Length: 305
Image 1 (cartoon, one colour):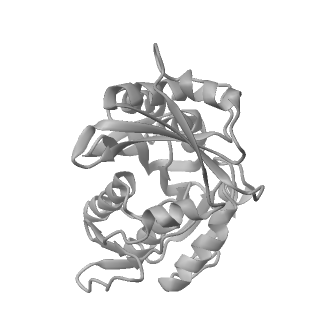
Image 2 (cartoon, helix red, strand yellow):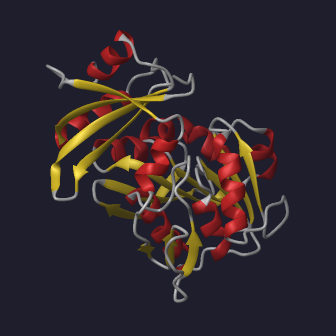
């Protein structure tokens, strides 16, 4: 088999148990970040049945199974392991998905027609996350529309963990003269973003009205530092990294600038993220909740006094 195969570990449990496991993961400092985890409901008509999933670039051994099992308090549910095609598992999970309407935006795969009454984006099923189907991405699109309607201006925008580039593209559609900086830790996203930019006639470049893409871990890239401070920073990632990045976000966002956060569950994860952002000098402006997910708009204080 190919050395590039992806392996998935799955543990099925009630919603509260999986959410508690996700919170336990966020509190672990020494986690093997090659083992990427996420939780979701099994089906829309079974909202209390969830699965904790982990993806690993090699066949997982006892250590990986034990790490996933250790997130559960008490007896862990049975963990199943399956091998997936090298890069196609995200694509396959997204093929055939219907278009979504999120506020002013309409997002669809190439198989579906455009909506002339909305800001329309074609985002194919791809190797990266961020097609608009997940409630966090759709919620961010809605919140961006609220920001624009409130009269907010943005000349410099960063989209951290951009995936497909969709949220950065959406910001450019709302603020056409903004300089957009897209970043992701996964190099695969570079080709994905460039392809999606071409599909949607989004100009790529370093100037006003253009988007530029970099591969970076968090805010650790010279271009991110050079192009700041940002009027708007978008980060649809995970609660743990959001907490860790709070001080870096404070340095990167201009005084009075806005922060749009998602990827956090309402409840304890949301409280932890809000606490970290408050300590970093941000105050809440607005909040959306879509399903179990919270989407937060915060603004950096002009003065820490």
